[in-house]
Length: 454
Image 1 (cartoon, rainbow, N blue to C red):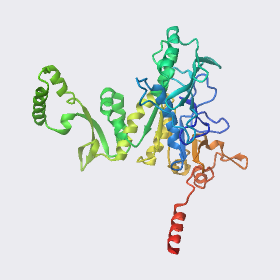
Image 2 (image 1 turned 90 degrees about the vertical axis):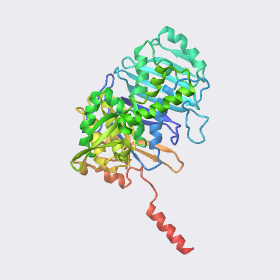
Image 3 (image 1 turned 45 degrees about the vertical axis):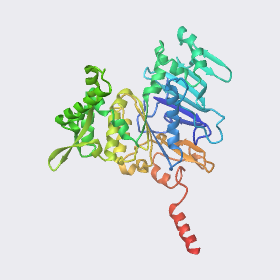
Image 4 (image 1 turned 60 degrees about the horizontal axis):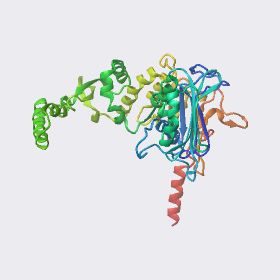
């Protein structure tokens, strides 16, 4: 679980930004919290991020992705294609800084700090809470030429860390210790690699490409998909798996095609063995495709992925993610969750995460959206989001983005919201900022007036 995340000098964010999943104890929140060892206050299971187009919402999520990408970057011979910093314009000589406080699957709390300039790691530190205090796991400071390892790092690994750091300035020490004999260090790496799940709805096919294999291996996932897809009112009654040859060409056509390919391959490489030839020819034979069953005119009709709407594919991608994330207690970070998903589906996904019974392992959902209806309690009969679960991103006239929670906003020195306030109405009225500042209708009217004068 994420507790806090801080970053600075990344894309449109120049100054230090602080994001937190801690509950605001001064509020009378209605949504349950999750509690982890060594954390006195509860943690939220949902956070929604609002803001105008190009305000920096995606850049905020990209900061988390940059941290994850850098930690999991494997060294290469020439250090090409490694994660690099994307500093604020004019600050390329300054490091991009990231700090995350989290609880891993071993229920222990960690702080990981990372600074990168270009592709180089200029500072890195991992600490773990052993009680109310932190214990240093390791610290690497390029400027001061310091490399320190705490008692948790096994001796043989401790001796190898300085050598790795010198030879691989673009890789993290946490990556090097990913298979450490100390399981607590390993769990810190695995949280960042496996528990931070970032998704963009722009390419659902990327996530669906491995869906058939996941369904075949995981009966629980298959069962939940077969329950959720009909319930989502997408017109899908069921989903089944078919082999590649079953969904494209007949067996007779396939045999003719394979025989022709066999002759060509044998001609190109006369020394190829029959076993190797058969292996190559049958590599795609067992490939599985997902086929969706729709009820049309009283009959079940098969439809392939290419026949489905973009919205259906997005919903399927979400549902295929949902069960593993809830089972593993992962952090699900979704940019523009509402694109091509009906608001009622988004509301139900929020409710799943915000309920201890449907989210028993404390998985977290952090998403950006333009759907302000989620803030309107009159639509759903109750508040979908507590006030401390709402965040905003706003960009000023100098191109700098600012990330802030609803609870930080003060009007005339007083809290901007009360329990009975309609957050939806106040937001669209501009009380919280993070709205487009230009009236398109006004600008268009001005254009026509100027055109008529000319």
